[in-house]
Structures are given as C-alpha cells and as structure tokens.
Amino acid sequence: MDSLITAAAGALASGDPLGALKRIALRNDAPALALRGIAMAQLGDFVRAKALLRSAARSFGPREVVARARCLVAEAEVAFASRDLGWSPKSLEAARLTLESHGDRVNAAHARYLEIRRLLLIGRVGEAERALAELTPASLTPALRTAHDLLWASIAMRRLKTKDARAALIRADRASREARIPALSAEVEGAWHVMNTPDTRLITSGEARAILLDDVEAVLASPALVVDAVRQLVRGADRVISLTRRPVLFALARALAEAWPGDVPRDALIARAFGSKFTDESHRARLRVEIARLRTAIRSLADVSATKRGFELVPRRTREVVVLARLVEDEHASVLALLADGESWSTSALALALGTSQRTVQRALDALAATDKVQSFGRGRARRWITPPIPRFTTSLLLPAPLPTD
Image (cartoon, one colour):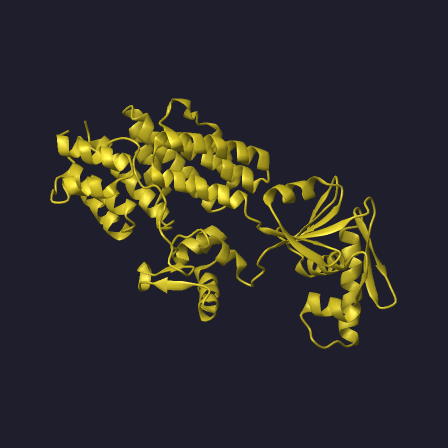
C-alpha cells in the first residue's frame, strides 16, 4: 500500500473525507476508487459513492477477493444510509463470510452490524437481538464497540427496557470518545436525544400530557388498566389482550378509557367507532352488539356498564385507568415516524419497513405532500422523500480498517 493510500485511509477512519480526497482525488486505480467512494459517502453524495465503489470492485484483480468483499460491505452501508433497502442481504452475507475466512475480523464484524441494523429498521427486533447476542465486541475497535452498544440501546428502547438502554448508551458514549469520530459521536448524541424526548401521550381522566420512555415503562409496570393505543392492546397487571384485528372494539375501549371514571354518550361512541356523523336505530343496534363483544373480549380485566346516556368502563382489579397514545396521531403517522430519522427514503424502502404495498405508501406520501409535511426530490426510481427542512446526513460511512489490500 503506497503512502497516499495509507494517508487517505487514515483520514477516512478519523472522519475527514476532504483530507482523504486531497490525496487521491485524481487517481483511478482500484484502491483509490474505493477510498473515494467512501469519502463521497461520508460527504452525502450516495449516488456517486455507489458508482465509485462498484468501479473499485470491478477493478480489483481476481485474487483480491478481500478487497472486493470490503467494497461490497461499503456499498451495503451506503445503501443502508440512503435507505435503499432493496440491496441483497445475501450479497452482504457472502462478503462477510469471505472476510471471516481470510481473517479480517474487523470488517466482518462491521458487515454483521450492518445486517443487524437492517433487521431493526424493518422491524425484525427478535432476529436482530439474537444476532447481536452472538457478537463479542471486547476485542474490536472503539468504532465497532460504539455501533454494538448503539444497537443494544435501540433494541432496549424498543423493548421499553430504559435502564438497559441508558447503560448501553453510556458505554457507546465512552467508546465514541475513544474512537474520536465526529459522526459516531453525533449518532450517540442523537440516541440520547431520543431517550430524553417525550414520544408518548398519557391520557388520564380526559387530561393528556407528554411522557418519556421511562414513564411509559413505569406505566406498563403499574397495576393500572392501560389501553395502549400505540400497539392496540388492553393491559392489566397480569394479562394483555390484543385488539389489533378488531379496530371497532379498540376504538370503543379507548373512548371509554379516556372518559373514565365518567361515561360516554351513545352518539359519541357511534361517531368514534363507526365514523358516522348521524345516528339512527341501526347504529344504536350495532353499538349494542359491539359493546357486547367488547365485554366478552376484556371481561377478565374490566366490565362495560350501561348508564342513562351511554356506557362506562369498570375495571375489575384496579382503581386507575390510563391511555397511552402517540404524540402525533396523524392518519399517516407511521410514515412520518420513519421519515423523522432525518434520512431520505424511497417508497420501496418505506413499504418494506412498514410491511405494506408501495401503492399504499405512495398514497400516504401524496397526502402528506399536499399539506407540506413531506418533500421529495429526484424522479422515477431515484425519487426520495424527506421531512422538511432538508436534513443533514450524519451516519458514519466508513470501514473500520483500510479498504485496499495490504
């Protein structure tokens, strides 16, 4: 490896893409192309980064399998950062196995962390947790230890284990300081911001307030009857009843819980559950049927009693009823939640992460764009969606070891 390539790789490892480009910007040999690709990725030009990394992979000789594998790992990270979730996980796995077989443990671990980050992004938390548990970061670089603990923190936050999340973030912060890479420190800072920012509303007796993840965990551990509007569950001290597939019943349960200890008029329940502005005898008959079904569904936790003007919720084993709801309950809140990460998303990536069709996502984006809640740039397959204003890209896009062969 010549001195300019070595210096450029060192600059990239320390988060200085401009310093790397000063040394190799005019070179077109395979190692220089690879490092230029990583530099462009760190600067946010993902399209150019992909092209350079592919050119580098083609330029390496047939015996330079490790270098080509590193290029594939770098290209996968660019795809992840640009929210292009259509890239093949099998290609990344093949690159990881190649690196492992040739003794490049650091880059192999980096590839594994990318696989786990993708699993988390598309909601496969259990698989991500099992894969992460198999890794031991003690002997790895500070940058990879930071990534490891950030993943544990993310999983713990999704599991509502806030003590574990904070402990992981403390370790990540310590490792990022040791790594001295600004982008990594920014990711840790962003994770702390998520922990310390209210993301849920607690509704009690008709009054709502924003609460932190710690408070959500405490509410779910309390003996209160909790109507969880985030996951469409009714929770008791020792039982959880899912109403995910019964939206009418959940709408009734939530309306009754929000009004507790008072009752809810029949007309209000009809409007809430059926979306009808006008009521007649057929609506009232349907309401009686659905209330009977709700009684049956939640009978182990609460009863639903009739009053002169409507119905009221009567918990069986507690004297407190609360509702947990999202801070923003837009019709397309799930799409907005993904776009809120500050990255640019394609419709295909959003559809994959949400587990729905691209057409459904496109309709949601069109509706949000009409109210200026989202913006797009590019055309055709290159079109990407963001939340205004245009965010900066802070993801750390680098390989933890020099890319070219030694």
